[in-house]
Image (cartoon, rainbow, N blue to C red):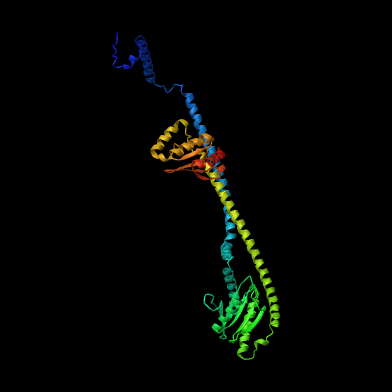
Length: 439
């Protein structure tokens, strides 16, 4: 029996030499027959050929279940231990919070006041106008606190009115001039003070807190030709006793003059100044006592601040413990992921093609990830919904967050201190360093 073969049905046969065509056709026919016979074989269920394979699969399944059970028990033990530690840490935090809550607001207020004071005394401290204003403010406070029945008015911005005017309950108004010079107050300032006194028809007191007044004693009384009484006080400082006694002296002089019992020229200012020195010594003792009390208060505040600082450090340590616990839990949970597969090298092109379609701006970042994988010998899992970087034990060491035009890496392994960094060529050394810690 012969079979006719049409060459148009098998055009490839023409590429084979004529003398070999017959043998090649026989080979192909035998091969086709063998394939057909193989595909028509039916497997006998009672045949034991596949028993070893089935047993192997059973063993693998048992091992997998056992391993998963062991890992679950480890995770459960870790969870119980972490829960206990967390409860103890929470109690410590609550105790610390109770200790610092009562004085936290006070410390914040004190720090705010200190800051404001520093700003006041450090802004333009080299300017004499600022220094003068500070001295005037201090003198004003001294006068207003001692002469509570009188009224002090700031007139420094008014022309020919002095720095302050003290309106007494006796109906008299005193003009007060305050100077805070490094050098002695010159005659021009004295002449101006006299003109202001005569213009306002008031008695007055001229105070120099830090220097002498030219041609004047430390305490000097003067009666102008127009009848007004003036008192000059030099080097008073800002403790207040000289200022207070000077005003008291001026008030007494005015009262006696109104009764026509006083001759200004007959007053012995030296004796008054001796008494003033004695009063000053008493005031210095009081000031020293106040300073001692203030130092005690500062020490108490410092101790409280130290306690607050220690509490704050403890708070930071507790936060660090919480972070560590969180990373331990994350690490344990990462060990039981069953859907994470390391990307094989021959599948990189497939991933890149898909990225070109979905988010083309990420191509350069994915290629950088591949380079980092090669240099650190880590593993990449890029085929599931979530992307990860894995170590050699297939534990997750980093979450890969994708955006339209950037990629961020969040390290979750306990050896990487949980940092979050954007993937780019500048951050490559840092990223490789953190991966190598966990690999």
